[in-house]
Length: 511
Picture 1 (cartoon, helix red, strand yellow):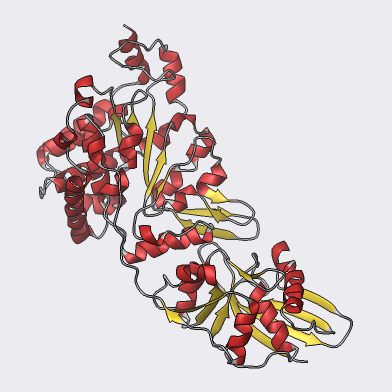
Picture 2: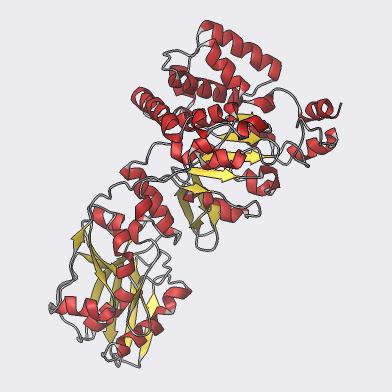
């Protein structure tokens, strides 16, 4: 009897630390012990491993089996340790000999008959293994995902016996190095489908060009959701690094990775009944939430006031920091959350405040209560608030070719993004205070206009900076070197909730 070590990896947030699976088979009463902070799923692997070994034609060692998952102070979870534990038991009990597992990491959950089942986080493990120049053996269903890591050699196995034959050298597994995935043909919703709404379309273009957040306000059926769903088509395709980061998050969350939609920016639209944990992430195993699944993409919140107040408040910090930290008593997990927030809401409880049909009979107090479901600090963090009125009947019957297509607008967006990257290395929405002073300085006339508006409207310092960022994006779309008065004027006009209180609007509508 002897001891052996097999390499594998744990998962902690968006990190995959190396784990050494040490297996010792010694004399004594037959026992099977797993140590090293294993959670319940890992502890149950002894039963799966025992059955898989027997059903694969091997014998269970008649002695004490001790499995140590090192480092011992790192919590271990999931079924990915089944395969390395099983191989360790076979090698330590002298039922298997070979040296084919040096500098190779193993992952896989075993069924009772020895078949390998897919695991979560295979891409994250492959990215981490490539940094250590280790090869991987994963279940067949995880192979395509793991090979997205271009610097990692990955072999696929269908069952425990496939790995055994590889170790013996009778049927070696084929290790294939990952290659860059070519972008697939993008199938996006066309902006031409949205009739009318020139102001909302212009706001959507500015939003895409500068990575700004946007709130649509309007009666039901005016095209708010249609506009939001067309934003991903206006955004530039993700780079390979961005696509890998997003795919790794989906892998950790157990979501399928669609290779046909590689480099297509994600679009997440949770229902308004979603909890704070489902939105920001968390739970007993600290899984990523919707805001992390929308990393490098779009998070669309329809019917914004219908979300719980506590749910909306968790968005405030990620909107500023582009990360979310989930703290627990024993450990913390950090997930990236660089998403673009698009929201939509009705102007009042009935939805028809300001509608030309005069159907709204909401009082000023009820409108204020409805708007108060969205806190002032959260509203202040939204770059633009744009009204989306009812579409005239004539616009519904106008030919679709009269409107600009998604491809036409996307070309202008890409030019503006390229200009921002060459000038400052990031989008305008991600500029900090020092960068705003350097790159968003308006002309003297524009500064005078902004000073007067800030005094009259009582703008906060945050709103002041967000107007400058949006104005910089408007200038970039016009390829203007400086922020002029017209750019600032349009940026302030796109923050329509800063202009007057909801009660005043309700009084005007009912009068």
